[in-house]
Image 1: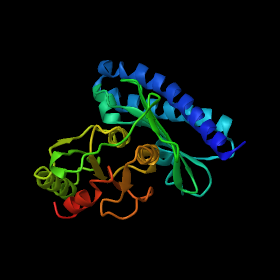
Image 2: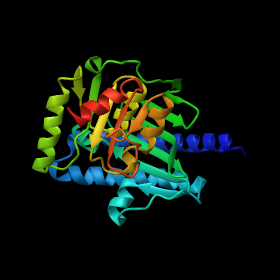
Image 3: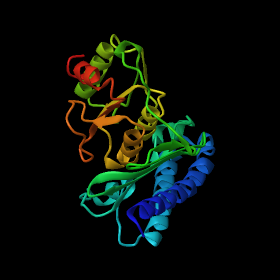
Image 4: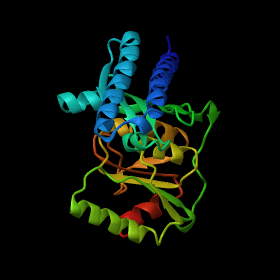
Length: 269
């Protein structure tokens, strides 16, 4: 089997796993409105765990020698080191706050790294039925149609997306809102969708032009989206402009025409 065939096989398995998890997310999503406040956390945790088990179960059966890193398992057992081995990195529900509120930006994110490089990516939003896929060197797709990043080259005409980390530390919030205030004078408008993976996919299909987050949860938030953006002709990098590090907790993304101006705006907003 050629490398290309095996990558296609990895992608097909990831899509199957994402669709299985997506079905479960969709069922539970429509229950969230009926959950009493006390049970919200339980519903999210149970659905998160059930989805991760489903995805890992499906992939482990197919690829028993591969390594696995998931948000839920990492939360339960502590950090898992990323090695050069083929490693599936999964966020069973990205956008859990959206999930609780019935806000339809919720997805399952499945990425595969080989030699620590994001190589296969699947992001599936089962609520609005959007499936983003990408294989390193083979393009990116939304529901089977090729996608590409925007060709916007002016910061002032760009739509900016950000995410705000879960921390409610006052100095973090002040720094974040201060930066937003300043960036709003340099971009057209701002969106906060509540899902890091979906924001990266929005860059990939040209819906938004700029995205950054300081303080995402872990590699599962970006492993799949990074492949999809890159394959759509976009860039994924550290907000300082240096190379993207999947194990760091900050990322910026844009089309290539905007990177320089965006990095400058982030450094001196």
